[in-house]
Image (cartoon, rainbow, N blue to C red):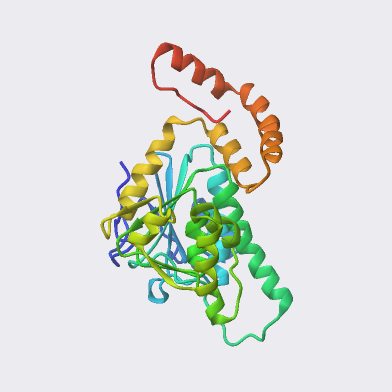
Length: 304
């Protein structure tokens, strides 16, 4: 059974089943068996992301605790690589996204790590595009996604959390759509994902004022699906992830694709259903699901 913690948020060395991306290789000594884990996306080192996988669940931990896991360009690229890999892995049934050091994510990293860089519209567009691809995978990708939020979920960090299918908040969680306070508009899909969770009126108020929303209020508003004692968000997220094992992967992927197109008109949704449902009806998982139901046993879905 996969359990939370194991050093990701405590500073203790993670166990061997973590893919820990800070491992160093000297020239000529690179271990090709872990090369994909170290260079997940276009050659960028992914010490910014810790990955742990067990029982069909992958846990991705944003790992810059000294900056409350602020999202740098390198972290974006690494996270995108991990999500793409999980999406293409038939053995992965769910993805849990969390943060190290007691915080989820404090938003975008305003200062680049390699010195001052003058504002550039094209660079900004490229950086936003990477974050948008991450959100596309969280919201519309084939795997169920669960955000386990403790502490700060500000700006783009709040966007990542609201993009997930299920948001579990520890009582320490604090949400803030803080974009306007630094002269930016909400991005990373929040203009779509937040109204989906709390309704357009409440979403407008949160984004236009940038006020802080505590965990209890987040639960009452529907921003968080579950509010749990501080420190237990990851454990609860893992329980939620285990619940997806009894649902056909192809059906989950199809429903996520359709829901990611919303809000749409009824006709848009009906047309999307007409496209997806016939494909699912021809799948082996559909046959297995019907057979298992008749035989009164748990289905053995294979994602085919």
